[in-house]
Length: 287
Ligand code: PAF
Image 1: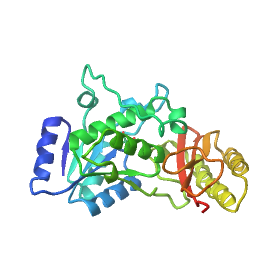
Image 2: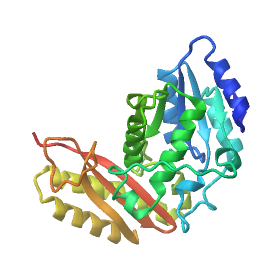
Image 3: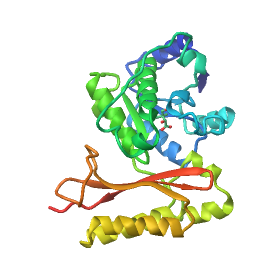
């Protein structure tokens, strides 16, 4: 496995990986890899001949008061994990390679990026869309894999690929992979590392309370009341704040007062200790 930090060697390595007409998948990451990332890699390996992963902690998607400096960086360990999964190439550019002096272009996706994390983290999805578009241009993969834990991010990236007529990858070749969870249901996230042991135990309240709210909604309870119950359960369970808890159309992310004929999703962001945790789950549609 090669780990590459600058553009010319990347282009040469990509050309040689595809020299026999092989297909190439990209798994974009910010490192601090866990089993959730490995699931993306395995799915990429299942579908493509060659797999590249990127590791880049993208400063443009962090707000001024966010955790850019604290975000775990462990390139050597991440590289070993990716090599063990049979990844062919790791693209790990420096900030100067990704955003050289004079860099001035921003990609802003409206609609799906509004509300939810878009409201709580102004500029975040511009940073994500910009870096993912650049990663796609740099690696030119046939397909790409993202975790469904970042449901809104996935919608933003697909919209960007569609709107910019990207062909490497086509929007339809941007695959979401189901969230990988710990035994107690907590979604795997690099940010779980910020939790103390006590907070980590309390954090399992999030998936539990979401499942309870979903069961209530699916049983016909008023959605607003079920979500109010979810908020109370989180605050009682050790979370300090609930940033949002909303029922949305799963594809367009339009707000929903109640489930209807189209697939719906419950999306939540809440704070516990130093961590801001997000999660989302499907809510059965009513036909
Ligand atoms: O989900 C992530 O890890 C990041 O937002 C991504 C997609 C790699 C862009 O920096």
